[in-house]
Length: 132
Image 1 (cartoon, rainbow, N blue to C red):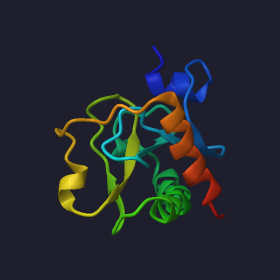
Image 2 (cartoon, rainbow, N blue to C red):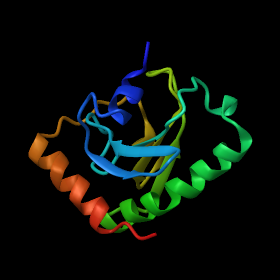
Image 3 (cartoon, rainbow, N blue to C red):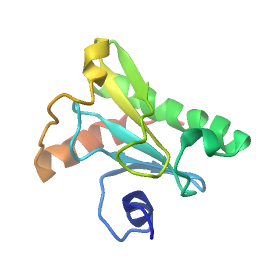
């Protein structure tokens, strides 16, 4: 059975897409830790990130880099943090989150609930600042 991320990539479930290429898909987390929280997913459905092919794994960070830079330009933060937990969905993915402290990457913290209009605004802020 396809993961929820595979269904999002296939267009079966709507999302707030940030970027896409042949191997990766980036979209907003609809229950973000902070505004600007983006999920970057490998299109190949692999459960654990370290089971991903070496070449693809290295390309993943290169794909995520301009998105992280756009997040930093779009939201007031010290940096864009990255986290790979992989327990929620059995499909390798990374979280890019604008952070000011390590507490901003606390996945046990209460998640935000943004309206569709707010999510569309966040999407626009990131996409407008995406370079390369």
